[in-house]
Amino acid sequence: MAFNTGLSGLRAASVDLDVTGNNIANASTVGFKGSSVQFGDLYASGFLSGGSNPIGDGVRVQDVKQSFGQGNISFTDNGLDMAISGDGFFILNNGGEIRYSRAGQFGIDKDGFVTNNQNMRVQGYTADGDGNLSGIRGDLQIETDNLAPRRTTNLTTDLNLDSREPVLENRVRDIGPLGVAGIRGESFSVQYTDGSPDYAVSIDPTASAREAAATLNGVPGFNASATTTAQLNGLTDAFISGGTFSFNLNINGSPLTLDTSSISSLQDLADAINNSSETAISASVVDDGSGTGTNVLRVIHNQGETLDYTYSDGTTTVGPTQVLGDVNVTADRVVAGLDDPADGNFETAFNGSPIRITNEFNPLDQRTYNHATSATIYDSLGNSHEITQFFVKEPSPGNGVGISEWSVYLQIDGEMVAGTDTTPYTARFDQDGNLQSVNGDPAGEIVVSDWIPKDQNGQPNGADGPPAPGTQVVTPIPEPPTSSAFVIDVGGTTQYGAAFGVNDQQQNGYTTGRLSGLDVSDQGVLFARYTNGQSQALGQVALASFNNTNGLSPVGETTWVETFESGQPIIGAPDTGTLGSITASSVEESNVDLSAELVNLIIAQRNYQANAKTIETSDAVTQTIINLR
Image (cartoon, rainbow, N blue to C red; front, side, top):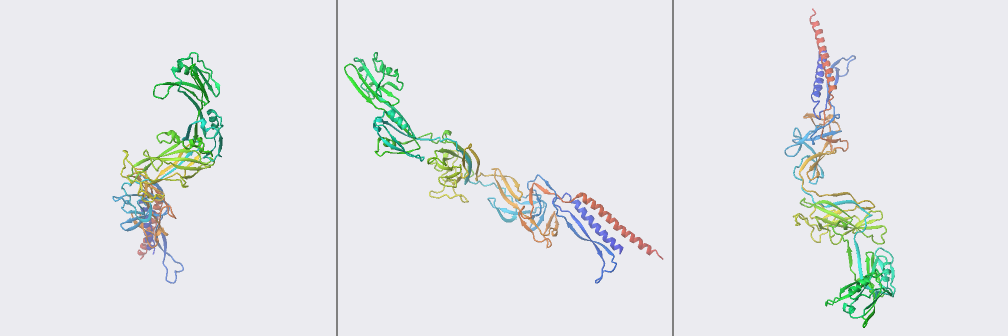
């Protein structure tokens, strides 16, 4: 009996030594989970009774249980190494057999599959060509092909336009010159585009050109000036030198004092007028325009006063002759029109005057636009192009209260697009500086449908061009795109009293790229990095958990397989449900506590020695009995 008891103890201690030795041997094995031996005592008992004083029959090994506690996570220099922080196992395909492991030392084989160092393929959720995870589980594979280019279909511009900026463009009507005689006594009303009430105007029937200009200068939106020009075609050098010459000039009825005693030519008379005390008048000798080379005297009053002149050579007297002035009027863009019940000369002249634009938008002249910003977009071949958005402040519509407008011009590689070479888009903002609409669209979208991608020589480069005539471009652009049309979204643009600034500018196109590296997220998503700055999801590692982890059966290579006791795997994405997260460029170390295992080794050794002593003692007792005679 004692021999059996001692033998069972030796066997148990031997198993304990084996398990402890295995733990110590795998103290540096990545993903290894330490084991412990569980013992149970033995008793001999009958079918109906265990006896009144049962004596133990030794010990047996009930189970060798693995501890699936979390091991320390250490960093590595391999981007595909992964450690699970929390519950779960990597799913490995070993030639059709599914295994589970915590060892995340992975690499890529010759076919691009993600494998461990035993060429078992890592399983996960695959991604389509656009990087969208499909939810279909399979072997993860890294595509090493170049990333195909993607044309730009959307450009989002988020910026602030400075509301303090002035209106740079000036639109005016030049009316005149109008002879004051033709507009004296006229009455009319001026109408405005900003909602201002009509302004009544009445010109005095006896007004000089200067007085008429003063009246018109008082009209909002008008700027008027007057001049009086008298050309004395009958007065020549011969007339002056032919007798006793005299000359009188009245300005609005008041005589101008001149010294004519030594005048012998037209130039002498012009000098006398220019040297007079009246600074608003000037004289010059000019050709009379008849083609005969005859010179005459021209007198100009630059304030539009009425001139009366008389001259004589002692025999012939010319005059008195009265000359009325002319009025020149400039109407700015707020003037919408005139209403004259009598349809007078002023209204006729206004309606016949074209609009003259000064400081008109010119992309080559930065003085003609308030703000500009540029971005890079791509055609269907992956060629880059530069798009520039110009913003020009316009006068506020209506009465200017609670609303503002800006014109938007678009240029790609130096060529105007979206029809903005003739008609810009109009962005309207409310009283809070928020965008109301662009050309009436509250979404703030501008569709560019006339762009032809060109090379550096200005010739079409072979990429997709505009949609066919009559084709309606819908937004967002459907996938896959079939033309060069794209959408500019300025819906986030504001107009505050702050400096112009681009808060964000994003577009969804890119040129071709070569694979330059791999990254793994906390959710186990494998991202490929390309030389064009893009990244794309190639797949996502899948994890499995079990209701009874201890029911898994170890099969070597730091892997386990499913058993009846473990139950079926619960498979999902990392960091979801009870599954742990992924730490990239890291591995999970063995969870073996080497110090504790060395202590266990000493204990197991003593247990073995003690059980051997039991056998030795039993042997000595037996020998004593044999030696009895």
